[in-house]
Each structure stands twice: as C-alpha cells, then as structure tokens.
Amino acid sequence: MKYRLNALPVPTTNHFHINDISLEFPKPKYHMEGDLQIEGDLSSIVIEREFLGKKLTSKMGFEVDSYQEIRITIPKGVHVAKPIVLSHHFSSREVLFTKIILTYLEDSSCDFTFTFSSDDTSFLYLVEEAHLGVGAEGNVLFSNFLGDTSYCFYAQENVVEEGAKLTHTLLDLGGSVRLYHGFGRTLASSMNQLRVLYLGDKESTLDFHFYYQNEEKHSTNSILVEGALKDSSCKNFRGTIDFLKGCSSSVGEENENCILLSDTCRSRSLPQMLCHEEDVVGTHGVSSGHISQDTLFYLMSRGLSEKEAYHVILMGNFSRILKDLPEEVVSQVIDKIEEMLA
Image 1 (spheres, rainbow, N blue to C red):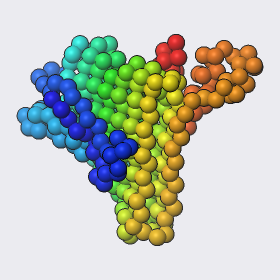
Image 2 (image 1 turned 30 degrees about the vertical axis):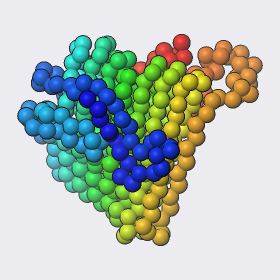
Image 3 (image 1 turned 90 degrees about the vertical axis):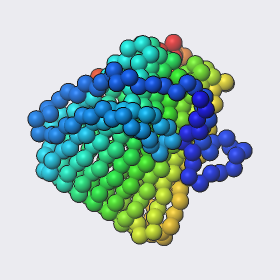
Image 4 (image 1 turned 45 degrees about the vertical axis):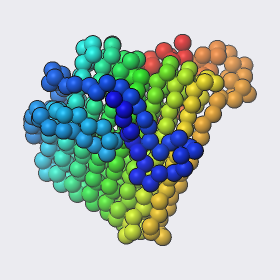
C-alpha cells in the first residue's frame, strides 16, 4: 500500500523533494496483543485504558483501524517526584498501535519516559496528545531502540497554557523506517521545547516534521535537532515556527545539525519561520556536512584513534541534549554510537 505522509501544510518547490515522504509497505494489522507496561508512583495520578475498534489518525497522515488508548491525568497541584515509565519490548513481527493522552491540570508536574525496543521486525504507531494547564510542567522522553528492520511512527500534539512549560526529548536510534511529527500550540508566557537526537545507518529512512505555533504574548518555542548519518541512510527534516498575530514579545528558535559519516548518506533540511507579528525574535539555522580532516588530524595527533576521534566529536555535538538525560539513557546512546562507528 502506498502512503503520502508528513506533508507540509504550505508546500515548497518540488525540486527540493521535501514536501512530504512517499512510502510503500503492507498495511499492518493490530490484533490487540501488545500492551504497555506502566511503572512508577501511580498513586496520585489517574490512569484509564481502553481498546477501541475505531480509526486512529494524526497530523502525520497515517491511519489504522483499531488501537489501545491510555488516558493519564495529573490532578491540580500534584507533583510526581520520579518519572512515570511506559515501555514495551516487541516480540517478532509484533504490531502496537497506541494513543496516549496526557492531561496536566493547573500547577501540576510530572515527567514521562516512553521506551520501545525489539530484537526483530516490529511496527510501532504511537500518537501522543499532551495538554498542560496553567502553570503546569512536564518532560516527555521518547526512546526508540527498535530492531534494524522495524517501523517507528510517532506523532505528538500539544497545547501549553499560560505559564506552563513542556519539554519533549526524542531519541531516534533504531529501525529501518522512522517517521516523526510534532505540532505545538504555545500560549501566553509559556515555553515549549523539542530536543531530538538521531542516528541513521545502513539503508534507514528518517523523516521529521515539526510545526510549532507561538499563539500569544511572551511565548517561547525551541527546536533543537542533532544527528549523524552513515552508509546509505537518508534523513528529511522540516521544521516550522509560526508567529501568529497577537504573539508579541515572543521567541522562536530552531537549529538542526547533521554529521555525515559516509559519501552515500543523504540529508535534506527545510527550516521555516513564518511571521504575522512584528515584535518577536526568531532564529533558525541548519548545518550538514562531513567532519573536516583537519579536526580529525588534530585529535589523532593527541593520541586518539580515528574511531575515538569520531566518538569525541559526536559526543560533543550531542552534549546539549545528553546533559539533561538520566545516566542509564546516556549509556544506551553511547552504546549505539559505538555500534555505529564499529
């Protein structure tokens, strides 16, 4: 079956080949077999689960016929000290379609960790909706450790109300086809941050599409994407920050940096900034290229091997994202980098 996914709302010239991504694969079927484990202090939050025999859609454009829905509410004024972990390890050829709805009531806080792994072929389609009430705070860490021949589709939408703060961190480290879509509405005096770290190798396809709106005064949107490609992997990045009318004194920034570790990998990037308001600050930039031979020579002249030099450079580029992650997660990322450089 053919799919056209992650389409830009306002297309650019077809010459760039980045308006959307076209894929062809058999439509997966969900048999309600897989289930997410939920761990942590659940005593002060409300969790509801339901299996639904109706269509699951998202702004990504992908649609399935049935799914599991998990609704989590953090009550007003409740502060959960440690992250709530939702995880699943796939069996061979397992399919999981899930929608997670996170509702933060006023002045609440809670962090979530979503972790998915497999040793063989699997298919994940996760749709996340987050609504942060006035003064709420939340961090969501999504980790993809799926097997080399797996599919990973993750679409997230969020609304961040006045004075609230939301940070999404996305670690894209496994699978052959990986698609991500993010849509954010950032209201008055609130902050909405997205951090992405990706590694692509072999013949993997990575496609990122993020669209964040500054809707009201003193709002802040920030998108930071760091990654590396090797072999014949390819990556598309579309990042848009939209300053809507009425969002004066707001800030928007986006940066994407890609290190190319082979001559056959491909990186395409399209950062966009739309502005319908005068009194705003917006910055955006993209860099993509190979590591210079002078840099490698400098590091190797200090006693590092070529592999060690590459490792130091990658870790330096990724440090802005890794510095805020738990040690066990950083260790897993380092293992993936070592595997990629082997």
